[in-house]
Image (cartoon, rainbow, N blue to C red; front, side, top):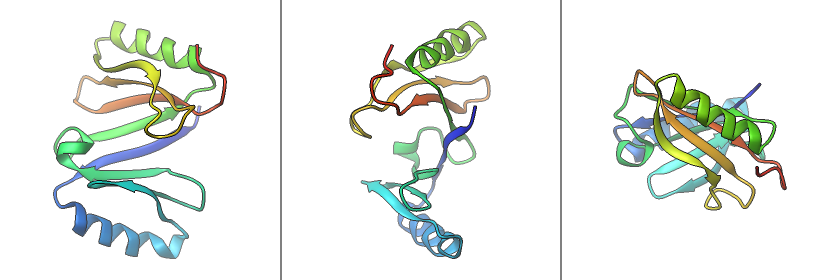
Length: 128
């Protein structure tokens, strides 16, 4: 399975946006999507690196958000069940997140260290 995207919180979003835009520009990464105090970066058409203000991004700086690409909605559902059984805490049941795009199907778990783990499927029609 491949990473869907990685994200984390920053203490000062405007300063973080300026820094990452400048630092990653030589690598061909630009802001691909953004909202109020959050941004997603990557190569053209990809949103692989996400950061935002601590209030929007989840736990305080130091904690991480890790999204792992799932092959279909059934795998997203299975991730959620297995992670809860392993001691994780629910941070968002499996479901569509149309605010990202119409086929964004994901589930979220807070792991034992406070990190936000996500399984996500972007494929149309793969919702289970």
